[in-house]
Length: 111
Length: 121
Image (tube, rainbow over all chains, first blue to last red; front, side, top):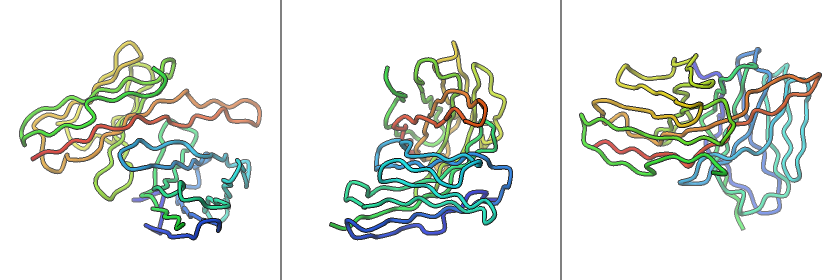
């Protein structure tokens, strides 16, 4: 049972435009959500997080939106840059140690 | 060190051999995790340590897999009698334990190492 789903395996965006990566979850107990970025042959690196008491968190070009009623979160990158090309994972936790990761979305930003 | 360190970075072994993968977490991080990423798939939870104890081993695929942690520091993941389906990148991560302070969460994001790529021939 995949509790965290990223239904788009890949996404291509022109440089300077907005990238929107989506993530759906099924467990209503999840209260903490994170986005990670992964380059080839490297470990994932933390990007941004949001707790369930918020519906938006912003950090520079990155904004995460949480819609608890829809069990949906999204990551917006504005403006997109070629260096943003990577695989993006969302992860969720139910105030425990266990982080459940999605399968990832490969973002390609075209110059 | 400054980050999570894993060794070896690459390991090629023959089916049936045992392998050991090592993880050095960030100093002071009490929580340590092992994840696995098979080709084209997401991160699969294997095991979690809090201190030297492993309260959750539910992700270990079979009894050929085991892990230990000593000194609330280094962890070793051991795979016995390796099979071809064990081929994957094994990722270690560490974090501070998440706590709640008023309405603010102290972030407990995971810090990952670069992984150990295991290939079983």
